[in-house]
Amino acid sequence: MNVGDAVRAEVEARREAFVGLLARMVRQPSVSARGEGVREMAALELEVLAEHGWEAQAYDTPGQPVIVAHAGPKRGQAPQVLIYGHYDVQPPEPLALWHSPPFEPTVRDGRMFGRGAGDNKGQHLAHILGAHVLAKVAGGLPVGVTLVLEGEEESSSPHLDAFVAQHRDRLRADVAITSDGPMAPGDVPVVALGVRGILSFELSVRGARFDNHSGNKGNVVPDPTWRLLEVLSALRGPDGRVALPGFYDRVRPVGELEERALAALPFDPPAVAEMLGLDEAAVRAWDGVTYHRRLMLEPTFTINAIASGEIDQHKTIVPARARVRCDMRLVADQDPEEVEAALRAFLARRFPDVEYVSHGWMRPSRTPLDHPAAAAVARALSRAHGRPALVQPALGGSLPDAVWTRTLGVPSLIVPYANADERNHAPDENMRLDLFLSGVVATAEILRELGDALAGGRGSAQQALA
Ligand SMILES: [Zn+2]
Image (tube, rainbow, N blue to C red; front, side, top):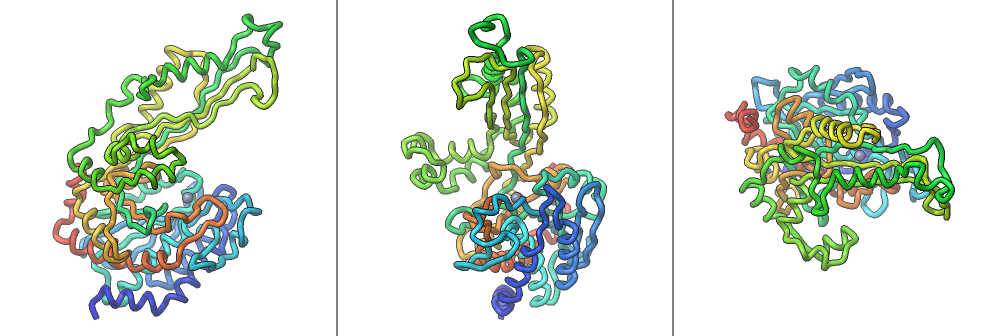
């Protein structure tokens, strides 16, 4: 039997044990937003890792511990792969909408329901088991694997970047892999080579110290809502372009490789219309390349919410205050700190009465599409899932991926293992067990392919990024 078949046979033979292990992990709450069960979960991870041949250690941070585990050959003996996951989960509320309690893992219709099943316990457990199974059936691993498990991802990873900077030497690798989020609809495997970053902020304008009668006091008290609308109009033109000076200066031009990758992605207007809640005619106005380019490689400026006065009541007032919450999704090589500074400077110059409150940011990331690890991982996924993997230049959403590409300086791939309808962050979160098990196989295949792709060319990964 060849190694691939032996991996599959081993996973099939141990199916119940693996599913039981996933249940054991989902049963342990680990809600980082309120610290519930997070330390207990870290202890359970250490146990599970030790049981499956990993050398693991928990490191304290100012927040929750980071677990670093290693399997296979050490640096200098073979290429090194870093795999990132997180053991914390979103709060389970609203509890009434769950069909079974969030921390009582339940299998229905071939899925395990429970908070954290897909995001992210099922995904990183597939990595833990994939390396374990491959080491067992092949008598060792072709690459060294360092697993980094964070306990604060759902609280926006406040300490991960500093941790990675501090342990740069221990973590150094030829490539980083993150498995989080869903596969494409129809169980299509995806390799993404970057993420959009994000800058979140709030603008507020104050008028009088309290609401005033719009008749008795109108025209003599300032109207903060009009002022806020002036600010917003000054920041974005009618063509949708962000008018902040310098905003587009660092946006990386879309190259020929990216164009080709975008053109190879499926674009099915009725399905896209259904997914977005739009009329098909609106979607048919785009071609596939435009659609994917706007989603992955162009920045956004979105008004998340706007508030002033009391919209559900007929109140003829001049409200005392108006607020707006926004986010900008940023693309390589925009720098959120720089955009934020430009925004603050713009406000100080033109709208000094507008208050800016930062709600945090995350950097964009991008790894070159022609990095050999991307093709290797795509081959491995296609084999594990029996269908060709999609290779995307980036994800529309944001992940702390620049921690790897920028702080650690390694190429990074995002390889989701969960079903498209995993309901992450929502009631009835679930992971399909067939995909959990094919994830175990996929990890074994990825490590084999990366062993071939990275051998000999060690260091070339870093060079490709330069
Ligand atoms: Zn999440």
